[in-house]
Image (cartoon, one colour):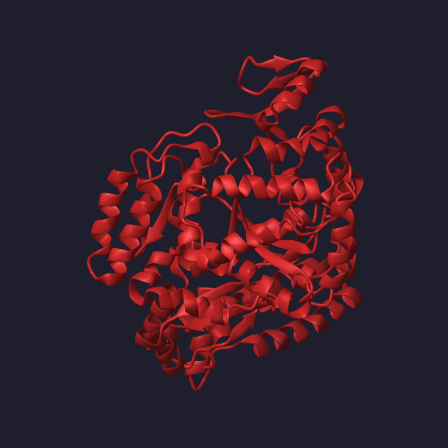
Length: 538
C-alpha cells in the first residue's frame, strides 16, 4: 500500500463548498481573488504592493504601516529569545518588497489539536516556495494569535493518549489576557501521564517554560510557538495592540456609522444559499473589550450599547473613544480578516475548510474598503501512520480509500470482498423492478384503481429483499468476525472517535515517541500548494 496521499475531495472529510472551491467551480470564482497556484502569486504581489502603499481607505501609507508593525513586533519579542531567522524576517518587513503569508489560530492549550502544526508548517513552507519562484522579493511567515477571542471552552483542553486534559478556570474577557495561574496543578497531572525519558523531559520543560513562567495566555503561546518554529523564521503576532489598531480606525468608524460589512456580506450570503454558511454577519461586527469583558456593540435608537452591560455611548462619544482608545474595539470573525489585511503586507491566508468558507463571504466587503483580498489556501492535512499500522493495513488488504471511508461502509464492502459468494441482491432487485414495471403498465390498461395495490406490493417485496440482504450480510460478518475486528481496530487507531486524527490528537502524542524528528518529518512531507491529504509514515 503506497504511503503518499489521497485528494481532499476523495477523503470524504471536506464540505461541498470546499470541494467546489478546490474544483474551481465557476459559481464561486467571483468570491475569491486568485486561486492558489505558484504562478498566480505574481499578480497578487503586484496588486498588494500597489494597494498597501496606496493607502486604501486609511491615512497610513505602506512605509508607516510597516514601521508600526516592526516596532510592535520588536516590543512583543523583547522578553523572549529570538532566533536569527525570525529577527531577520522582522527587519525585512521594513522593506517594500517584503510580503507575508499568514495563518491564524486560537490560543489552544499546548497547541490543542495536531493541525495547529500543519497550519504553521504550511505557512513556513509556502514562503520558501515563493522565495524560490520570486527571488527579488522577500516572504515571511506570520502566525496571527487569536488573542481577542473569548470562547475559552474551545481552547482550554487537549487530548493525550486518548484522554482529555482540561484546564478548569473561569474566563470572561479576551483569552490572550487570561492569567495562566492555576496551570501548575494541571501540569502535575499531565506530567505523570508523560512518564520518563528524554522526549518526555523535553515536553515537560516546554510546558513549564511556556505556561508556568509567563503570566498570560498570549505570552505563553508566543513562547511555545517560538520554541517550536522560531528556527524557521516564524513571526508570531498579537494584534490586540493600540498602535496597530490606530491604523484600523477608519474601518472601525465605517463599521460603526454605516454597517457596510453587514450589507455586503449579506449580499454574498445570498449567493451561497445552496451551501451551509459558516458565519452570519451582525449589524455591527465589533466587540467592546477590557481585561475581563468582551461584549458585542449594539446600535439601538441612536445609542451605541455594550451588550449585557449598562455601558452606552452617543455617536460623538463612541467616536471620541475610538480616536483615543482604539484598543477597546475588537473585530469579530467578519471584521478580523479585514484588520489583518490592512496592517500586514499579506499575500495569502492559510486556513482550514471552515475558515476558507467564511473568507469566501467577504470579498465584496474588501472591495468597498479598497483592500486587496488575499489568496486563500486550504491548509495541509495529514494522517500519521506507524510502520506497524501500514504493515497491518497491507496484510488486511486495505487501501487508504478504504480506511478513509465510513466504518459501516468499510465493513460492508470488506465482507463482500472476503466471501467467494458476495451478498449483493441488486440484480434481483433490478429484476423485480422490471417485473413490476410490466405490472404497472398492465394496471393502467386494465383498471387504474389497481395502481396503488401494485405499488404497495412492489415496495413490500423490495423491502423483503433489503431485509434478507441485511440478515445474510450479518451472518457473513459473524463468519469473518476476527478479520473485521482487526480492520475496525486499525481504523479506530488512525481515526480516533471516528474523526480525523489531526482534530483529536495533540503533537505531544507523537513527540513523545519520535522527538524532534517528528517535526522534521512534517516539514519534509507537507506541500502546501498540493490539494492532497498526506499520509505520512513514521
